[in-house]
Amino acid sequence: LSEFLEKDVSELYTMTQPYMLKFLNKGIDNSFKGRLKVIKDFSYTISTKQMRVPNSGIIDIGNGQYRYLTERECLRLMGFDDNDIDKLEEIHPRRKNCTSSKLYKQAGNSIVVDILMAIIKVLL
Image 1: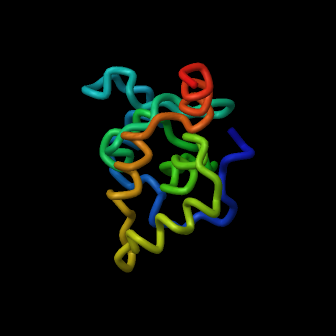
Image 2 (image 1 turned 45 degrees about the vertical axis):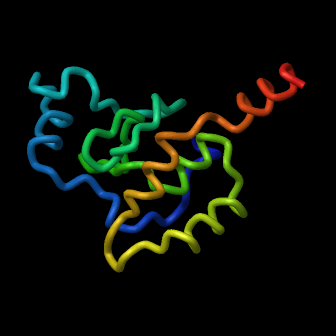
């Protein structure tokens, strides 16, 4: 996972929801039903709503703080390279101090690029 993560991520991605933090820091059972996982070595399924229901997991940034995966990290995990991600960011610019639900949606609705290429080779 570490090879897909960005350095110096904006505080915009820091998890601030008190009920999620309480669940993570105290292990309280609630309505998350196991969907809120701290990830270290691999990511779970990328969903289209990463900032609301982070199915892929969250990153522990220390001191009882966590952050969401960025749009770029989600797209990297799906096999997109940074040049393609740069083009997507140009087409779908993010509003100031906001994440891009369009880019999260594209990552969540995508198929892993390497898997798609393998399927195409078999078909051809």
